[in-house]
Length: 114
Length: 113
Image (cartoon, rainbow over all chains, first blue to last red; front, side):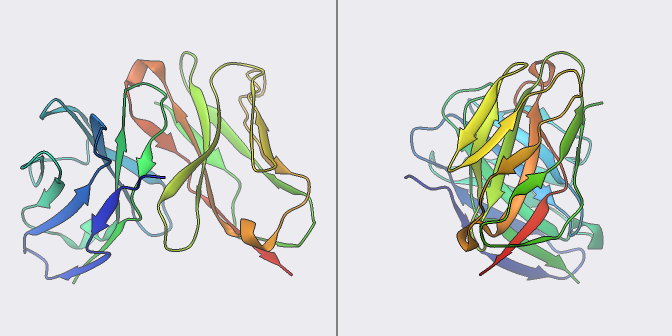
């Protein structure tokens, strides 16, 4: 079965630094997402992306966050100035169509902000 | 807003035991309901889903029935295997909130031989 690939699997950074989390969605998919899970808490929606623009974002997704699909294959999440509370597992997901069609998730990037 | 409440973990069972992981939800409208599973080192995978009341989703011996009257979607399996050890997430997708899945907190299942 095709896979969503995320890199790196672990990222350690200093508070205030910028990080970019990378994802390669499944090639014929059109909808892309980022979710995150802080240790011990629920998986939370961050943002959805379709047709080269954000279609929906949560309250968590503030001005420090941005997403980009720079080259038609990668889908990145940038955090401009990381905070301690950004430490979490970040999951990328993609989907062929919208609605309740199956989401394919990557294995996640564990971000640790020191 | 929408929310999903999931049975607290971790859950430890012996092989061939019966599994129930409880999930209840709060949502406006008519959400679709899902169970996702995360095996060690892997991403979340869709296990099963149900899109309307009284639907039963099933896959790999797991079942869950969409109960609108009790707003529940409990996951069950009659006989678990060691390979079922994973984290299980209940989730909903509300038609009013486009493609934004709302997840429960996950339940860690460990099956001992």
